[in-house]
Amino acid sequence: MLIVAVNTGIVIFAHGSSVPSANQAVRVVAEAAATAGAFEHVETAFLDARPNLDEAVARLADCGVRRILVVPYFLTLGIHLQRDLPAIVEQLSRAHQNVEIRVTAPLDGHPALMQVLLDRAHTALADWK
Image (cartoon, rainbow, N blue to C red; front, side):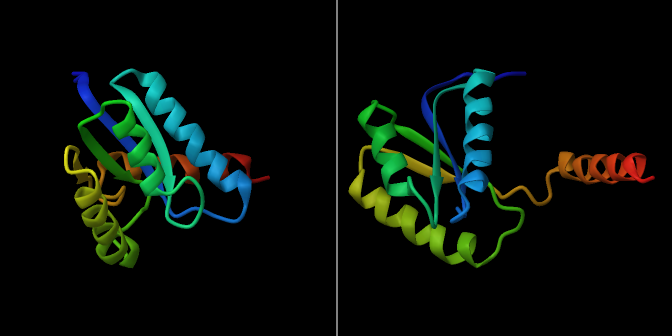
């Protein structure tokens, strides 16, 4: 069932890279999420590239979004998600008191991840000559 989130935006939050194509791959995922239709407002943000989370939240808040879900594009709950992201979100919550910001779980543990891994393995095996 598709839930349409009114007045809610999402931020696909990744580590970021000095390699532009790596950041572009995350932007493509964010565009696909926007196209899927459940969220009117979708932004991309990076820890170590631009736009950062501050900029993405500000853009959403300027559009009137009052609830923001930060979706970590990280596999596991490492130091950036345990320490850095909560500190950034706490600071942003103080700066945007009229916006509620929540963070979802990382990708690890999602049942579809196992299928993705198996698909990659089967594709590589089929290409093996």
